[in-house]
Image 1 (cartoon, rainbow, N blue to C red):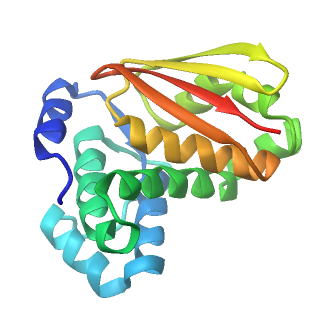
Image 2: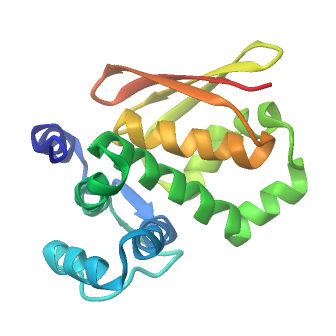
Length: 195
């Protein structure tokens, strides 16, 4: 079953002209797709999106372009992973992998060190502000190995952020569970647990 194009249309409709995403986030998704489905599939996807060249890592690009990319990627990934939702999670995970491989991500890891999710996730709003121009994220400490993140004015789907946050926990702790809950189209909560 293909991804929910009605959901995509609703998200596209609320994007503002100054809502942007850094190029290396796009490129992380393209790299993941190339690894999983091959270069020819990525070329076809780029043709569908009318993309003629790869984004420049530190340039900013319109959010609608990124939304279209991840929803098409979810469709391409569905045969491998079983559902478009899981495809969106893979897209989210790939962006975290790309972030931690970037100069900014490497610098962050040197500053906070691996193994301390609370220290990293307490800076979620700051980290996101280097990657995107929209939304706010709020951190709440819920106990020893539990936090809640609340995202507002963020048009990415819950599955995308579940994948990103799960991958971040994997990088930081090697384990963990993320449960997302949509409160509205652009408002969601995420519970992060680890051992």
